[in-house]
Length: 124
Image (cartoon, rainbow, N blue to C red; front, side, top):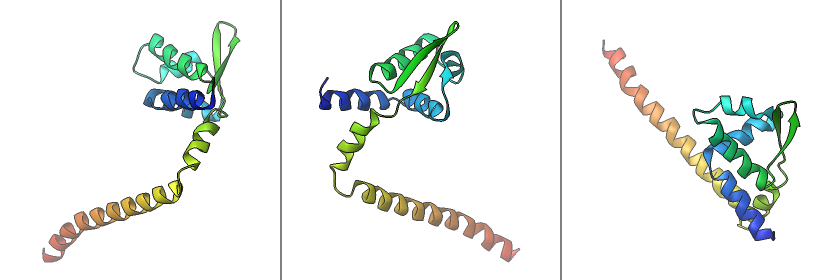
């Protein structure tokens, strides 16, 4: 598997919101498949398929523990994505500017929504 193929596999794996949530769950500690599946409103076989995709691209590793399989995060395959993104100049800075602008708009919207209520209270 070449560099591009590995990055593509990891990108495809993390493109799915269920798989991203599984990775977030495993960020703090390993979990058995049963505990992972309990968190989702989808079938256990569907969760198993998501875990298989994550395992095949190397983002998780599983080990048997009695009758269960315990899954553990391996973030190292994300390095390829990180390096690929780093090839775009000012990516982080551009996102920070966009997030700052969003924060400003959210603040303005909240302020504008509160203003009419305050005006009504003052006239009462």
